[in-house]
Length: 169
Image (tube, rainbow, N blue to C red; front, side, top):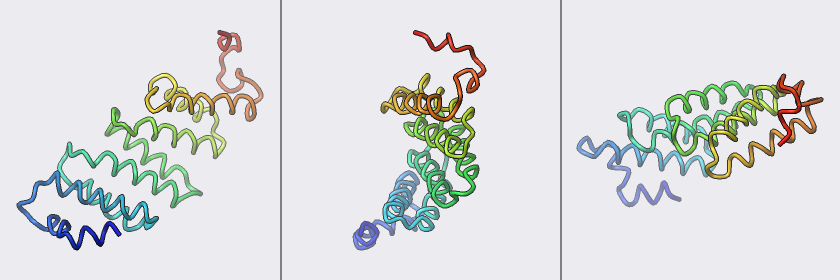
């Protein structure tokens, strides 16, 4: 396993080395968290991601660690989506231009969608369509909006409060 390889290579010793670069230690913690995450050992992953967040501000792995903590919360608390939603909101507030921002918006919108808050889901999907064309997230968001309007709300007017003629293009 990756953890065993890191141990045998002595890489984990850098975590205890007070003279080691902090960015390197944060990266190692994040990689360990990722390894546990991929093994679906979410408790161990959370511990390492949370440790990653304790390193000084501005270190690269912190944004992804915070995103992954929200994703873990989404999986661990399926009956309380607001825990993950709050964590995604915290991530977006702290890292608004990070590469995972559109994913966080999509995941939040999806949670609202699943739990029947179509207005909030459409609001977030619309933000993705308008502001996040990267990684084709805008296409996914538009498909979700179209699905909600076609299958889950009686009409566009009910869904948004806007007249239907605004849809014509």
